[in-house]
Image 1: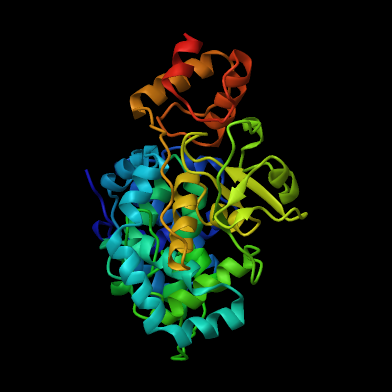
Image 2: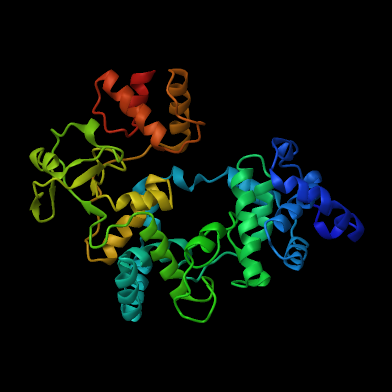
Length: 405
């Protein structure tokens, strides 16, 4: 059953305002007691209306906007089933960094060269980095999504998994409408409620949005200039170091101490140089630059040195597969050759899930067994590899599964 705010009598909506304003002072835990149920969605909207008004959103904006909102169970289903990150780095990057995206990305860099130069001068973020995000997120503005953003955000705010986060995003979206940056009919996008050509959540839109084309409003939907400059502003605030690298493919000798290959471990580049790690030009510079060695598919797959700027990618998206793909795509647009694939293979998601279940039974914290090789799973795999005498590269293999049995 799906209910909408328009199904309520206007009198009931007005009478609920006083209670809503009281609830807006502090959102109690009881507000989420009936989360995720379609039959309580209207009550949730009534209570949220008071919070939005108390936050200063104009009443006509609140009432006009919330009257369009409904509960969408499809959004909840998609939030529960994000299986794309169960893919290996090569599976994901082969699909996302394809010939067309490389060609179109290169043309966009050439077409808007002056704009990218100006953005880099102002924010310090180079064009290839921005174009890679632009291409991965929306195919350069060609695929923004077509779900009503407020419905997506309200559904996720009412859901039980991350209500506090999406309640804040729903409020931010109403504030965006209230200040006139976007119209209600423009607020359409993917299921998670992001907006614009580089997929900003509403709170980030408000905090980091830039009117780069000078038309008086921040429009990341129609204006590529606004979307890209806003992305550069956000990336700069995440700590991007002007003029510094982000990712570099390397070769690693078989004698390398594989337990040192972890994105969370930063070591002076001189230590990797001493261990025989090399880039395409030869031995690494033996200096104190802090770097991490990333093996997204273990010691038999591609290998990268991650520089401090790579941390920004992990802030943009916590998934190592996505972040490494986005950073790799940017290196390709900047002139790097295709990655050397190595001989690594990945386990099926069902096998990874079974391994996660086994690791959890052994006392390791791998989160919910879901078939995705995230940071917790990699740490547990590395620990068990060390225990059973396998190279501790954090990549699950059939050999490891046999060992833990």
